[in-house]
Image (cartoon, rainbow, N blue to C red; front, side, top):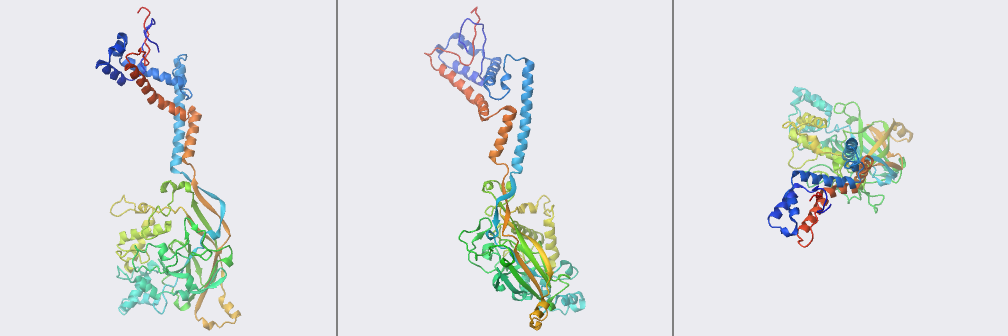
Length: 583
């Protein structure tokens, strides 16, 4: 930068066209001409497009000379030939392309798979989780003294005998047919679309709790089965559950129909939640119950009973006995999805190995679909207070069944505005459930409406599953009675089975969702690639911002200050004026 002198004339203008026009207009409209010389006024008025390009070039060369990005300084070096400059430009662009592609891959991985599931650092003792809830459903759906299903089935199949069936027997048969194999009543005209009394009829004819549960032992102590098991309504009919949450802890009772028959009595508030576990002040006898160790002595021992004259081979087929489901205390049982059998005259031993998945606190700020799970407070269910994937799917099936059939199955949670399907709707609600479980279910009115996607039933962020190892042996209870010289006449026509459930090990390894790539990891990877390919750092990015914004405005401000000071000698900071020696 130089003022007037005896040098050859050369003019450079490192500022943009808009600033030039602004200065020209400002001078024409009254800038005191005494503040600049005639020659300088003429120089400003003679700025044109070529001068503007020269100004940008001057600013660019200044950036190249001072940049810390590798290779950029060779772009404006006057001692380099054109071929050398082209070589450096091509090399620089290749580096930028390679770096951009790798950063794109890292971003995709950070965005799509930010979570990794790994083993926790420490094992978890079994007393920190509840003992599994045990739901037992008898395969005998009706006692013969109330409804002989086989006799009634043959009577209804015969059109002549069908007219002799009483209304009460018809109602009982229709109710029990909803818990039998669905193909049994395919060709029978049941003629019942709505049945709000279905559950009452099932309760009336089902095997009672005291009759089915003959003997119970918990943690090696004899207990009253009636005190520990509660009546539960499932798609299998009336079942009995051990160690489930009470109705007021599991359901939103204000949303349910007043007569919804989840018959678990209310208890004191639970000291356990799925996400937080047991409270520190919870004792060993809190509910849901837990054990202090592993082994059969710390588990549950049940003697199950049915009567031979109640067995029916048409309703549920040739396998008689019981269906058993292990689930968490906060999960409503759906026995037909996952169960194992306890046949009559058999002893079944279930060695339980829990699997637990937790989620780190660092993932709470992630969107649920990025971490692929919901915390309990994030996902609101209409009928349940506790969010689990099974509870969510039960609500989803309920909503889809109501949409497809205009009613819901008797075992589904519902409000007082929902109709209960009758026996003639068995095929409809079974078909609705099968459609929903398929991958391409679409609403019948709008083909683009994916009902299952709307349900959005992701796993819960803290979940517990109970895997079972099962062993089975003959249960010679008759010989046992003879050995004890117990008269079998005290138990005429009974059929027994025994079930034992306990934890296999005192501790187990849990899994944990944690960050695979956090924001810090993402920035570190990007910074490493930028440094590897181009030597870029945060200060290098700050340089680019500086030369694109702050530097030009600093020059502009300096020029404006000189223009508004008439007493100061004018030195043009934005361009270099060189006069020829002849002038």
